Image: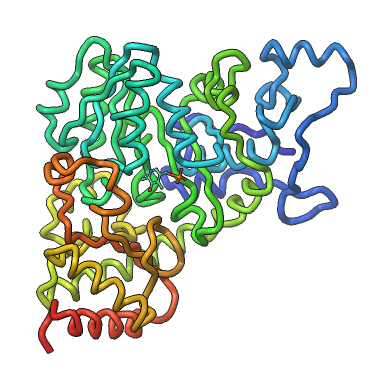
Amino acid sequence: MNDQMPKSPDQQPNDPVERLADLRHEFGEHGGVNMSIAASTTFTVLEAGTMPEIFEGNLGPHEGGCYLYGRHFNPTVFVLGRQLAAMEGAEAGYCASSGLGAIAAALLGCLEQGDHVVASDTLYGGTWSMLAKFLPAKCGMTTTFVDITDHDAVTEAMNERTKVVYTESLTNPTLRVPNLPVLAKIAHHHDAQLIVDNTFAPLAITPIEHGADIVVHSLTKFINGASDFIAGTVVGRGTFIGSLMDLHTGPLMLLGPTMDPQVAHSISLRLPHLPIRMIEHARRAQEFAHRLTAVGVKTVYPGLEDHPDHEIFHQIGRPEYGFGGLLTIDTGTTELAEKLMEDLQNVEGFGFMAVSLGYFDTLMSCSASSTSSEMDEHSLSKAGVTPGLIRMSIGLTGSLEQRWDQFERSLKRCGLISD
Ligand SMILES: *Cc1c(COP(=O)(O)O)cnc(C)c1O
């Protein structure tokens, strides 16, 4: 077991991949090149007196590697948490059984009853429901939704109970890029924390370096890469992550969204090729965005020069990892969107009609009637989520030319481009 903590931020390399490589490698038992899976729900101690000390919060994994019970820290999950923290340039991190579990824990870790959140009006549907419906009804925590790129609107929405400013690093499905340094400044001026969901842009954007206090991920998407299980993480300051695991008040500990060590092990093995995958997803998305625009299909992609946030992505992003693997096209109507997706899937085999993203094959969904359907019609139109909008998570299987030929044939058959 390797208990090396990430270096303090000023000692860390500037690049997320270098930070990850800088963590001393975990060896497995018997010298395995991969770490072993600590598949135990409970952990023994050599001396009975150690147990009360662990319960008092001393002698945990940070203080010498004593473990207690699997819903608290597990060694394998702890390693993955440290790796993801290193990737994001955070002091500490831990994992959850889903992205939404991590998001709930991050929010409940920051908020008390009666507190207030200022959030982007374009969020993942589940997060939107949690903030708009669940937290007000169950916990008396309220949210004002604003256009997160309108900094006056953000400032105006802040009040004396605002404890969190919440946004996604690349908004869903509108693919806007919030100006994180400005948002951090506004949040900190009001003693609030900036939470950023970085699920859409791992490696390409590293929010902590731009002032974010807490970063959450759904590990179900790009970081997973194979759409085979649900998982999440939250990274931030060591004291904050510790508070989430508190035996009496920690939401990760008490609400129980525990990550299985087998899942942690599997995700850990996918981190080394995440950079290669992100670069290829982005290379293809960029090329498709150019070609779609050229044939007259209304396309949104942050890598296009006419995208409203192309500049800010350049400023805060890492262009070497590209501008992300997602693009959207607007077909005009729900009917056309559905016709095109069916053709792409059932005639061409271009990809799958399915929600989610970051899979090795292309996934496509009509946002207004799927992943954003929790939002009401007014919120949808205000956020620019039109009925004919198709969100595509561009895959990396097959060849780019083969996929483009399929795409072009479907667009023609659906009358979206002329022969
Ligand atoms: C999928 C997703 C979530 C929720 O993650 P789960 O792992 O499904 O719980 C949160 N935020 C974003 C941006 C997502 O895409």
